[in-house]
Length: 388
Ligand code: TGC
Ligand code: FAD
Image 1: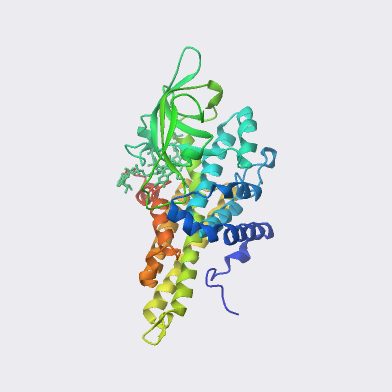
Image 2 (image 1 turned 180 degrees about the horizontal axis):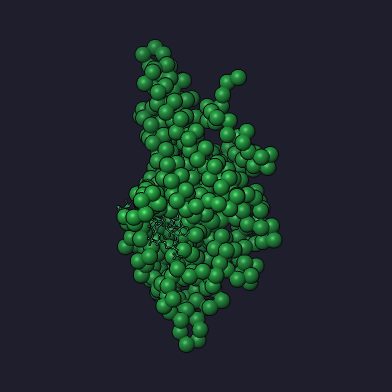
C-alpha cells in the first residue's frame, strides 16, 4: 500500500479517535475557509477577522481549558494538532489562536482569581473578547528580565503603569492586554483593558512576514490599573515564561503543517513541470530534496507527538519544548525555502504557498524565543552553565 507522503510513519495511527476527529475538523476548516482567501489576505496585509466566530464555534480558543469556562477541555496533543492544521493554512491564523489560548486565556486561568476567570474566559472562548500578550520591549526581547515597563501602587491601591511593548500580536484587535511589568516586588502581570486612559496601540506596518496577522506596539502613559486587574497568582519571570512554555509547545506543531503544505506543493508542481523532456521529479537531485523534506517532517512529527504525550502526562520540561521549537521551526523554514527553489520563478509569487510560508516562518523562528535562545537553553541544560 502506498504511504502518505505527508505522514510517512503513519503518526496518525498513534492518535486517539478524539484526537483524529479534532484534526479532521480543523483540517476541513483550513481547506474550506482559510486556503481560499489566505493568499489575498497576505497580499493585502489583512488579518481575516471574519473567521474568528467560526474558530470559536469549533472550540479552538482556549481548547485545553475546562468546560466550566466555556472551553473544550481537550488534551495537549489535540491542541498541537489544532496548531498544525491551522498553520498548514497560515502562521498568522495559528498565531491568533496561540496568543488567545496560551498567552492570554492560560495566564488568566493559571494565575488569575476566580472572578477574573469568570469575567474573561467565557467571552474569550466565544471569540467575543480578544487578548494580546505584552512581554517584549523595543530594547531587547530575548532578555525580558531587563524590562523597563513598570507599575507602582499609589495611595488609592491602584497601580500606575508606564512604559511600552513592541511586536505584539493582536495588539490593535485586543479588548484586553496581559501586560508584564516590573514592580517593587518583581515582575507581575496586569489585565489592561482597551479604553483605559493612557493605553494606546499602534499597528506595525511594512511587515514582509505574518502579513495576515495584526502586530502592534503598545504604549502605557500613567495607565491606572485597579488591584482587581492584577494577576495575583504569580510573581517573577516564571509568570510570563510559564505562558511561553504553553505557546511554544503549540508552536512546535504549527510549522509541521506549514512544511507539509510546502512538500505537497513541491510534489505536485515537480510532477507537472516538464524540463529536459521529463518531469522535474524524475531527477535524482530533486528526489533527494523531496526525500530530505519527508525525513525532516517525520522527525518533527515524532518530536512533537512525544512532547505532547509528556505534556499530557504532566512531565514536560521547558528544555524539551526549547529543543522541539528550535528543531521544528528550522525544519519548516528550510523546507519552505527549498520548495520555493523547486518552483523556480513561480515560487516567488503568493499564487503558491512556499514564499508565504517561508516569509512567515522568519517570524515564527524569531518569536517565542529565537533559535539561539533555545539552543542556549538546551546548552545550559547539558552543561549546567548559563551562557546567555
Ligand atoms: P531564568 O533564570 O532562566 O528563569 C527565571 C525563572 O523562570 C523560570 N523559567 C521558566 N518557567 C517556565 N517556563 C520556562 N520556559 C522557564 N524558563 C525559566 C525559572 O525556573 C526561574 O524561576 P525561579 O522560580 O527560579 O525564579 O531567566 P533568564 O533571565 O536567565 O532568562 C532565560 C531566557 C533567556 C531563556 C528567557 O529570558 C527567554 O526565554 N527569553 C526569550 C523571550 C521570549 O521568548 N519572548 C517571547 C515573547 S511572546 C511572543 O513572542 C509571542 S509570539 C506569539 C504568536 O504570535 O504566536
Ligand atoms: P533581540 O532580543 O534583540 O535579539 C537579536 C538577535 O540577538 C537574535 O538573533 C538573537 O537570537 C540574538 N541573541 C540574543 N541574545 C543572545 C545571546 N545571549 N547570545 C547570542 N545571540 C543572542 N512579543 C510579545 O511579547 N508578544 C507578542 O505577541 C509577540 N508577537 C510577535 C509577533 C511577530 C510577528 C514578531 C516578529 C515578534 C513578536 N514578539 C512578540 C516579539 C518576539 O518575541 C521577539 O522579537 C523575540 O523574542 C526576539 O526579541 P528581539 O526582536 O528584541 O531580538
